[in-house]
Image (cartoon, rainbow, N blue to C red; front, side, top):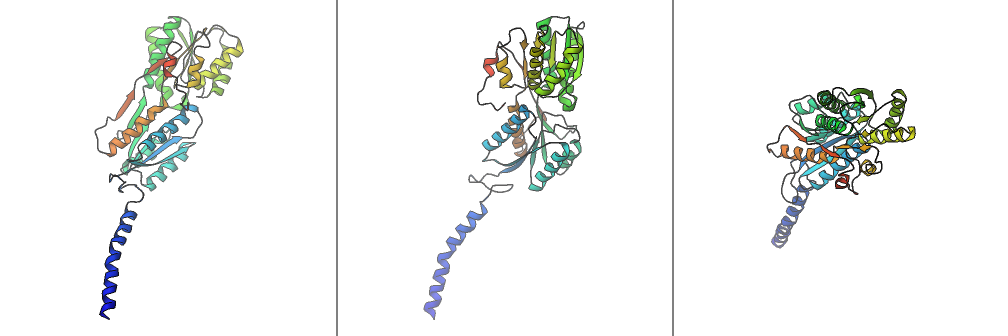
Length: 327
């Protein structure tokens, strides 16, 4: 009997290291909030909210956000969701909160996101807004300088056509603060440096289809146009198509915004029109993901990170060509 007892104790002693090892492996699985990765460092949960793909630039935002999240795989666990309207994005925001997101990088293109975003902030979630302005002191923001894009656009137009003439402004009211700030920068600067230029403002959308359709109508209503202040490269491609189809030769400048590779390649093709883009790269969203991680780590971060405007036209477009760009 003693011999059986000793054998049983020996078997138990042999199993203890095996059981301990199995328990250790289970504890280290995953790598979410409060978990330890292979390096023993905490992984933070970061959610990313972006609009559904309605525009090449928007598609590139989601692409670059996810690319950066993958690069930070050793430090963050992430979920990325895309939505078609404010209601859907609100639902996805709730889903990310339920998932346990500690920070959310949000690109809310529609009005009505202020209340749900404030709710998330009140529950202790760090919010980093990309591009759009949300009225809350507790939101971190990463964006290009929308107002300066307008300022630089006005200076560019005056440089090319002088201080007199007719200029069409294509605003996009549905884009909220983006159009508002770009338009403000353009009109205020134009009144300051070229008060005799006549401005004609029309509404459109950030798509080439709307640019083509709306500008075709504008061409029939205005006999003389010297320049077009378009706020977006996609819209501008439509504008250029409308000009080509109309056979008009009076327009000397078409601006844009965003940094679209297709648009860059059009710049040297038409020597009669100065095609310009105020670079507003979708890759800026990578900075927003970085800000979210820094905030979670407790590092000092400025509430607002504004990235300066760069002007691209046929004289320097080659510097910005990138065959790997999704936009």
